Length: 437
Picture 1 (cartoon, rainbow, N blue to C red):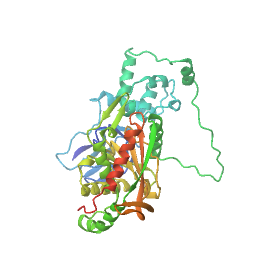
Picture 2: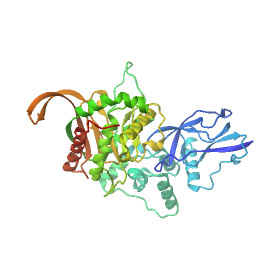
Picture 3: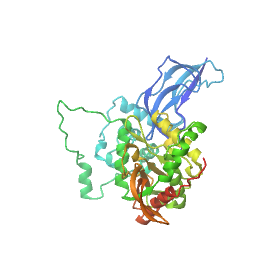
């Protein structure tokens, strides 16, 4: 018999840790290769961790709600395979940072009291549960925590940032932060202001927000506080696309085994427009602009529980229409069935959301940080319209839709924001009716 260490797998370049949300197997349960052992959650998506071997679960090293680093051993599986790893112990002494994190988390979970318990509700900044646990265990005040310059996404304080602060503090290399002004000092020392209480009676139902719901809420509020949102609207005549799809959708379904929806056609036009307007394919980092090399289109998708997720089509400008359709259908299907992997939601450079799915004519979507633009596709409607011909103008029945473009006015002016959405509309209206697929 040999013992195999099940480790938290790499889940994308920007994902360093995950929270365990549930164990699907218990100690003593048998398991097959590729069978899910547990469910995890990152700040982007929920996912399952499968076993790499056949065997029996003999040890579970973390509990639900524990934060685990990529590469850490999370369970031990006993297997008959002689080539399996024979390491049964899980000491993480080779990684002092990981050890400090585990000790800090363990102290909090066991209820060990630390002096000067921190109330994080008084801060407008986002801190992960892992960072909060370390702060509590190391008796770091809220003022000290807010003085740490974060190196993570959107300036967030990471595990490495706070561990370095702890190390510097013990070595006497840091000085106690002070408020910049009497007003700030008063704010720091005063209890956090809270929203007006909501009256609840016996007929009301109180529903706890889901973990993903809380993350989305924070992300949306943070975006509105970060970016200066401006919108531009334009109407596009998509009659040609409507008729072309109607003509080809059955043959496409029969040949490719995939549905031909409008979404890949729209995504193709957006990718082409981004190539022509590369300053829409950027991100803001402090006082710097990052011009993205790749065009990775986020595709907002509704989940069965009502939440929203944004899987990403990587290098969308390099896909033909068939490839785009397959990517759209694959991501949409896996999103509905909670089968997305963390890497599927990483690296987006621009986002498209289809508000017309639920009949909305137009919308004003919130920018998906750290991107600078998001396009909302309104419902396609049959409307009377003026049609210009060489023989003169006449009234005809046309299929039209609104495109709503939200962009960050800190770095995108009205001319660029308007020209970009105008170009998307032009590409849609110039769709070739004789195009083969």
